[in-house]
Length: 445
Ligand code: CO
Image (cartoon, rainbow, N blue to C red; front, side, top):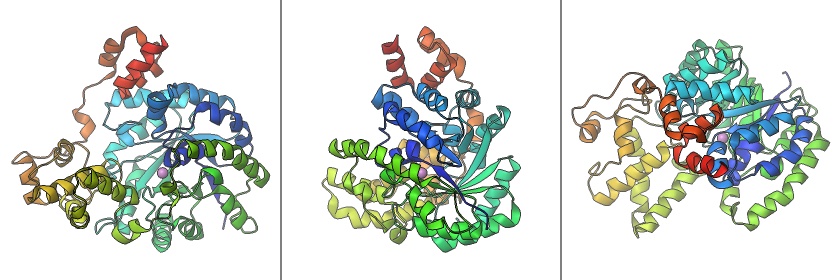
């Protein structure tokens, strides 16, 4: 068994999962040079919700953060997460936006671009993969892990073949809900290894409590890289702690070869920072609890607490059990979308409407209508025909790649924002988050 590599996530997913993505650039920079010496495979430092959060809550330029981190990183590759055609936002952007965004991400310091689509519709990954290769980046294609009757090992193996055909450089099994069980991971990786020599990276969250066992079985099956977070920003809704794997695998063939002394110093560095976020009420105790409900009900813990809050807000908590029963039925009607953002919120809202109105699909939110029209991509399984008819009538869902329907956006954005956008990076900020970027760019000028 070869050594396992470790990707450190604390500067992206770690604080996104525990600290509502509030870690400031000024809190990151003093430790980056030390992190660069640890021996990580890569550091995930950008993308996901960090782009939005930097502008919206921290009054920071996310591009500036990336450049400052890059300046301090000489040895370790920098990694980012994009949501396929949604990039770092919540809707599909046109291909010209995708192309420029990927070009500028790489130019400003990103080495590895990890791209995923919540529905595993590979057409939603095409533009990001093409652009990453065009601009010389390492492209990592994800399969988003979900559990349902259609999400079989064969289904994932087919998706892996599709990603390979698109020319990705490595593969990631992205278990965003933390529900991948150790034996399933083992089987899946073994099957993948039969058809590919590409490196396989595992990504999960500790939410349900099974993460460390899953990583152990994964490396036994031949997984090449695991995602972990330094202990002070690990566990709970975040990744498992980095130091644990260095300690556990030190004397084995898996030895990741990280510098344990530096890991301790990095963990200590984040202690007072974390304490501040606890004091400010941003790091909540709930985020640290182990919540195996996702394994039992197949509904992610975060979604359950959202549903509870929604029903309490409507003074209808007595309907909680009925809504819990409705969620899997809605999911089946809608072709088993994985219960991750944005589908978890959409399916949850529809289940609440179905129960509260006393008639199923009497009220349908716009997002669900668009989803059934095919605008998010192809669902994992066909829609229930009766439900589809009730939601969009005789209208036929689109069958093309959703982004094929989008006109180029950049010229229009440039005309709107004018001289407030002084660089292509400014323009991208505006194209992706027009409202908050306009405020930010105006104030800066
Ligand atoms: Co994650």
